[in-house]
Amino acid sequence: MVAVLPLTLRAATLRRRGQVLVGPVDLTIGPGGITAVIGPNGSGKTSLLRMMHGLERLTSGSLDWSLPPATARTRQSYVFQRPVVLRRSVLANLAYPLRLRGVPPATAEARARAIATTFELTALLDQPAPSLSGGELQRLALARALVTEPEVLFADEPCAALDGRATRQIERHLLAAADGGTRLVMSTHDMGQARRIATDVVFLLHGRVHESGPAAAFFDAPQTPQARAFLNGDIVE
Image (cartoon, rainbow, N blue to C red; front, side):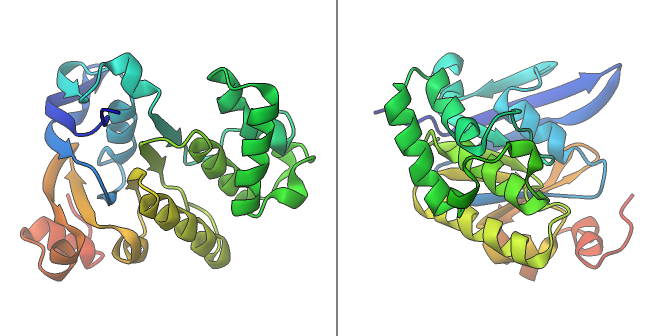
């Protein structure tokens, strides 16, 4: 099977109401690892992820997968900062992406139950998804995104507003997904998290890629004053 990656952005730009939200961006996402997209509030992290996933259409420039866009869309998933769930049971939520892909009901339910075990959701399968706690909802959203075994997962601040225990659970699942072959691209405001799990970093400033590279090198020796200031917790304008 031909891989969906690399994903290549060339002068990719997103505008809304005349304002440039992202771009122009030149960036390549290759196979393997976890990319942490970081930067000050308003730097365009969420917009970049939405643009790469296809939730936002480019205003100009290009975004190319190694496969046709229609095929590429079936090989990726997205997790929103605020989990979006169906007003159905946890089990029905987990099976839903599989049913959309034409998986037979019995097979979809079996796969849903299997991933529920992995994500410690088995005891909640019959509960209405909207009734779950914040940490449970985020585990459900992540499990549902991974039940289709995507090649690429985009995650927008997957641990925002979670406590330490819930954050550690989500990070464990993200690392397991990456170890299993899913390429992760995630935004985060938590530099401790980026240090713990990222293999590479994209530092956005004013909607543009200001610096990027291996995570260890970026955190040990950022190349620009803006990146150094950001890591020191200073205000970056």
